[in-house]
Amino acid sequence: MGPRVRLGSIAALILAAGLLAASGSFTASAATPTGQRLKTLAAAANVLIGYASMNNFDTASDSAVYQQTARDEFNILTPENALKWDATEPQQNTFTFGAGDTHINFAIANNMVAHGHVLVWHQQLPGWITGRSWTSAELTSVMNNHIDKVMAHYVGKISVWDVVNEAFNDDGTLRSSIWQTTIGQSVPGSGYIEQAFRRARAADPGAVLVYNDFNIEPMNAKSDAVFRMVQDFKARGVPIDGVGLQMHLTNGGIGTTSLRSNMQRFANLGVSIYITEFDVRLPTPASATDLNTTQPTIYRNVVNECLLQPACKSIQTWGFTDAHSWVPGTFSNQGAALEFDEAYNAKPAYFAIQDRLAQGRGSGGTPTATPTRTATPAVATSTPTRTATPAAAGTCQATYTIVNQWNNTPTSGGFQVNLSIRNTGSAAITNWDLAFAFPNGQTIAGLWNAAFTQTGANVRVSANQSWNSTIAPGATMNSVGFTGNWSGTNTRPTSFTVNGTPCS
Ligand code: G3I
Image (cartoon, rainbow, N blue to C red; front, side, top):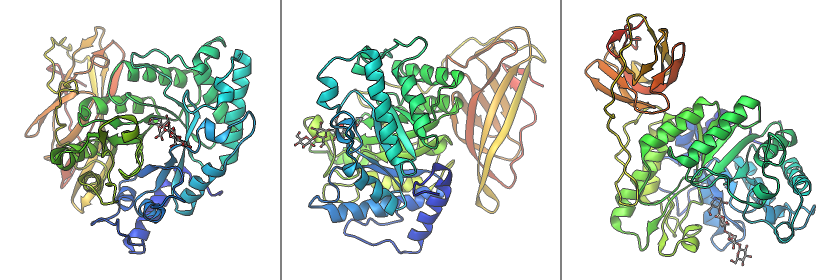
């Protein structure tokens, strides 16, 4: 196999990383925090943990501590700027890979996965593209050539590519970029995004192809639009493998219920989820409350949601030290967004990530409450009151599938279940309410795409999402699942009711 660390071998990579750290062979530095390194814990949780790698990381005055911290802590990196168009093709058909190679070689030398950012974006374009007008055919040819040459250079080295970045507006319409206005939908049934993904698959059939954007983390008009695009691509066989949730947050945090639902609906389409550019910017100088409580809580909650979602493959922060972050240069009087401070000391945010990773996937599933700030719209957590349609006797079939189970001790552990309700009757079931009882004292830790209550053994799972609350005759609702804890044995419940009526 070539030097690329393939995603198929993530387990091997992170196991190797874990063994390395467990053996104590990582080099301590001034920046080494207490506890186990993030990559060691991430390895055990089967997730990648990483960072955006800054320009000139190899020549900067703090290069030594920067590199040592990166080596010690992370197993995936994304060059922050070095693979953007202005860096890789500054003149038409003249490609410069020197800076990009420095980052990717560092990743390979340190057993990290390399994540490429980005092939098609409206920013950081060279003047030869933006300084003239193009026909659709001309610009399509320019785009194709760029994808071909850049991906070909990194075949076997870069495992995951952001193929298209930030193509949508917040209202879900397509951004009016040079790509959209010139190539746009001018090819019948297609558009530049689809063409870019098709071209990327052909250029490197082994790479994971990702659509990446900001403000698509929770359920909203923009994530709805991306969801519809991915759904359409999947239905028509357009190659797409992942969605990148950038996760640039403020101290308002993010509603975890909405994030969880959004991740789940993408997972249901069969794509992976990458948290690509995570940071939590604070008003500066940062307050003790923000640094010690608010920011670590937000970091922990997002890591928690990724770990609870099997389709979530990596968590990357956009940089890792407050000494080198895009935030202060973009937002005046804001900063302190990352997990290490400017002197490379681990912050409370670091220890929040560390603590949650240590609990692995499927445990630690009770998220700490997301702090409420006036800037963040409140996310409803209570189950809306709805009028349910009674299910007639024998008109439903409930399925409870244990898709994963693991041990924390020899006789206890965690598990993950998919729930489905099939409507076997002739009338729609609306606002379904599923009830069952656990036989062995199991407890639900976290449940997605519905609301739940558990009283002793008795569980009720109730629709609270408009998109899955109605089940047409003959249809199956299968978007709900949960993680839980078991002890002793973990037997399935045997009887279920929907809206008070027994199911078969
Ligand atoms: O390299 C030049 C340098 O020669 C020059 O002296 C200096 C003067 O301003 O500019 C330098 O280029 C800057 C470049 O970063 C490298 O530092 C650009 O001005 C600056 O605009 C550029 O900012 C980058 C930004 O994307 C561009 O939009 C940030 O570093 C980078 O963190 C940021 O990353 C984006 C992701 O790609 C997409 N998602 C959002 C994220 C944050 O904006």
